[in-house]
Image (cartoon, rainbow, N blue to C red; front, side):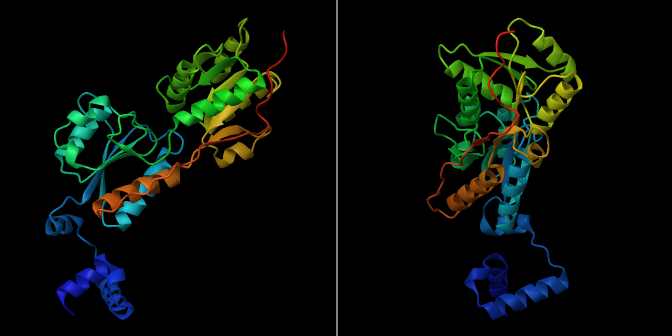
Length: 313
């Protein structure tokens, strides 16, 4: 067969007959053929790489979103280049600059706040840009429809309905949940809600210190389900009733949330769907099609670890 037919069968199998596709794939498997994405990019006169500016992949859902994004783009013939923002000035903006300088064909932002100076990056205006989990209010960067700010509002609204007024955030100050709850607190104008943080100290010591305060928190909002389980374990060791004395909220709704007693209230994030949505957006842009992005739901799975706050002590 011709070189063009073989190439078409490998890159656009839907464009050839089943008989031709089967013959080409059989020959490729027999030869151990692996596509050279760099050569393909030169032949197509376009970059074969998508740059991904990543935050902390330990945050709930981030690794799953990245894996889904990579699988879909790799299947379509694109490679991923990661930039963590850990370059000279240690910011997402720096990571974006590095990736653009390496000739990527698009940028994806995952687990990072979108820098307001993004438009000023040289060469970025021609690139499709999409954020997996944050909404860009300027409209420069497309969104997959997953806006984590809704998660903070869900948590705050639910806890306020239960009667809680003082929340403790068990996470590092710059983690996703800390940023979300701080933003939510600012948005709740006139609300009596208070926020305390615990980090850089053993969880059990932090909880005991909290509960000794006159305005002790009545709920602990945790940066992950694993952290929430550590809080629940510390409470069990010190005879602190959950949710009678302290309600606990996790983040990520992992299988662990349903394997403890009481079961854990946790925020459910459609991380994998968001990763796929980001990939589909870019593939549509590459093919000059109108992207179809719909809102992805963030849900609060309410279980036994949360309840009304205790009465006056």
